Amino acid sequence: MEDIGFIAHNIRLDDGTFTKGDERNSIDRLPSFTSARKILDVLFPENKEKYRLADLGCLEGGYAVEFARMGFQVLGVEIRDSNIAACHRVKSLTKLPNLEFVQDDAQNISRYGVFDAVFCCGLLYHLDRPKEFLETLSAVTRKALVLNTHFSTGERIVIPPGLLRKLYYKLRDRDDSICRFSLSGLAENENLPGRWYREFDSEDAFRNREASRKASWDNRRSFWIQREYLLQALSDVGFDIVLEQYDNLAPHIAENILHGSYRRDSRGVFIGIKSGDMAGG
Image 1: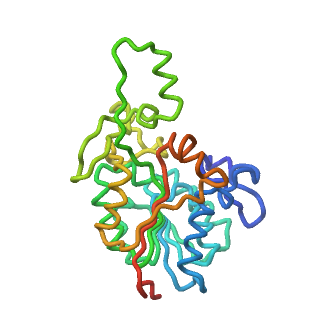
Image 2: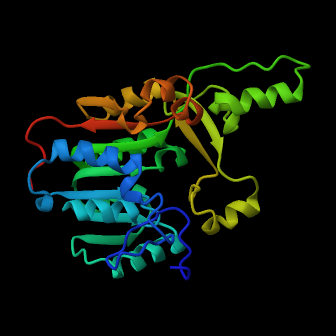
């Protein structure tokens, strides 16, 4: 797979090989996938072949492959040339007739109809109009949205004048996502509290954004919604069951929330569900 250059998804192919060399950190074992699989198995316990699932901003196609292996009719949507090339390469090396990829901006998902489930991992926090995108997602989702995303907090970090530089970096590296990701001060966007994040350091970087395979596409900065208001936004756009999934932090859930990856990265898994018999095939 060196001709493609996979940088993110380690996918098992039908011949037993992996896109990144060996089975270490294969995508089907990552908590980001296993937690999604659990919630989808609960919501769609029967034969999944009649259900459509969209994987938005699917990167190199790894999650889409695994959802197709679960039985879903899967559409992966990816904008970058290099990423979609990886997707098509994986498609050619897996016998999954229920898997399809298209090259498009994920914000155009309504072009492709309605889906029983939508998986959106690593995308929302790259947008400058995230609430508008959540409205789009609700419009195309019959049953369930699995949203894996960074969020911001309402904490105010004040660095006193004259504080030693090494002390500042100690604070930054310890557990503070505001400093770690160079987020802005508290702000408001689309009537929601949050913080701005700069996607590109320069105009040259923006013009060469095809090479930044994990960055935004057509916006220079993105808005990370404050966690509490992200939960509220999911409710406001039409999901009448809203929850946050924590089993991806196991086996040390409490430690991760208080001091570990959850606090350090300010990243969680948010679930929006439309109750009732709304997932008909």
